[in-house]
Length: 333
Figure (cartoon, rainbow, N blue to C red):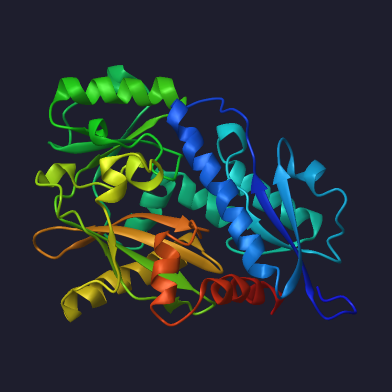
């Protein structure tokens, strides 16, 4: 909305948790990353909009009670309050129900993308290649069904929570151990995927069409073991780790035109299947035969200045401030 002064009034909404109800202690680093991102987004908007930062400590309804939905637009950075499952989707559903216009994807798309099995089922139905998988709710169910190596993930987390070198397993005993750890630590079923040895790309998209941003590839040059080439939690969030400093994003990626076309085609298909809006990032692995596999769709991906989405945006000549305001403009329009 635009008040008499002509400026949009924006609420930058984000989660601020003092503790987590599940997961690893290090997972708080991702929470702190959200807070830092909210601050820089608010600073980027301050020159063009009236901005208020609104942290959510318990419930989004309580946090937004002072702000009328007829006067304010929400820049939605809300994720998992205290690590609760599907809070990102619930926050978006609540914002919609309360009548706010908000940036990014809506609750249904966030829920579809967050539950990795539901997303993979949609990919398969649409003919989008994705690694073979199994879902285990109990260690007693675990069998050697897919061959090795495999990667084990919590079924409904993002931000690489629960993913480190130990998540890649090479035999049945290690698989059972990791599945048991994931179920106990993250209090949810474990997704087991075939590990695609090869290159890793991400495709950033935004707008209604949407528009494809320059293709990006993760540079694993400093990891000699092919099965060690993953974007782990440490690579995303732990600035003291080797992985954080040795997994740079190469954007634009150096990739043969035909392969680039296949990657982009799969990314567009995944965007539409999940029902993304505003902006998203699609992560893929590509095997030795140049076959792309969609790993996951990240609705409302990290917008930090050093994150992959902005790295792609700036390659089209867009500043950080322009990127943030354009995301708002999509909602205002």
